[in-house]
Image (cartoon, rainbow, N blue to C red; front, side, top):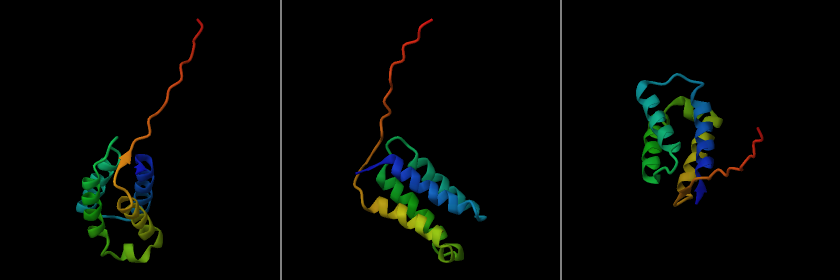
Amino acid sequence: MIPASKLQNSYVNIYACMRNYIWDFQTVEALADLEIETYKRFPNLDVLASDFIKLKSLVGSTDVYHDDDEFQKSFTKYENLLNDTDSIYADLKTFRKVVVVA
């Protein structure tokens, strides 16, 4: 079980690496699909895995993937998070009451 925020941080690493290059529309669309599911309050692991596999299949055969170590590490980290968990939980924010004196 991992927090959704950990998965989101890992996605940010992928995005940070990918934005350094120019991609075709299909790859950008796959990245957007992964982002949408990653940032849901309770993401579906099956959909995440499917979206990730689609994106990785599009970029995995490129020279960028093989030549840029940080790029490759970001994908490996996200993949490991997906493979090592069976559920995701959301961090609930706590609120404190503030007394306002008028």
